[in-house]
Image 1: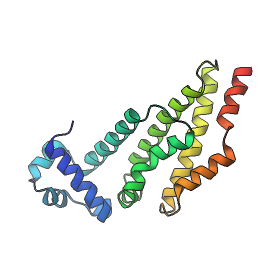
Image 2 (image 1 turned 90 degrees about the vertical axis):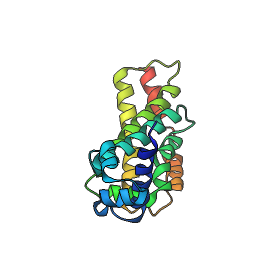
Image 3 (image 1 turned 180 degrees about the vertical axis):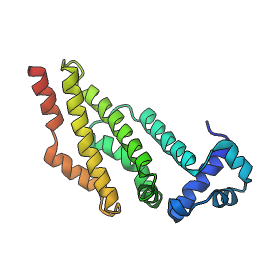
Image 4 (image 1 turned 120 degrees about the horizontal axis):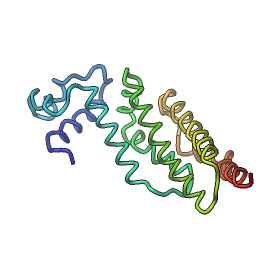
Amino acid sequence: MPSFTESAIKNSFLKLLEQKPLSSITVKDIVEDCGINRNSFYYHYHDIPSLLEEMITDEAVRITSEYKTFDSIEDCMMATVDFALEHRRAVLHIYNSVSRDVYEEYLWKILMHLISEYFDMLCKGIKIKDEDREIIVSATVCQCFGMIIKWMREGMTDDIRSRFARFWELYGGITESAIRKSAEQ
């Protein structure tokens, strides 16, 4: 559990990310906003990139521990983008910064975890090859990841919830069909 100071630093940083690009935020901005001195910041974090990485990791841990079962892949995707919807400007500032790779890695890991959990739920009592499992999960993660990255690249302006819903109306059942085909072989 983060200390009071760590929480204050993270809250100030997120608040500042909502207001301006990552490259414009300084340690001075953060410490002035949360009312601590620079030494306190550096006691907890090496620099702003390490703070950002810890915040993204914390969010990934929260999502993977909070979401254990899903009714659909659409639910997995929504769990992944809920934070982005709540903090749209901050996420766009991260996505459009040199730290994009950190966010993309977080997104990939979250999707891989959530879709693997969903896949394992679908496969209860069904025997399929490990390599088939890996192919099906990876293909599904790639679809979801691509949709989310496209949405972010376009400025997160369209309604991602309805886009996910429509996508799964059109493509729903593909994962289940792949599982059946694997089990039959």
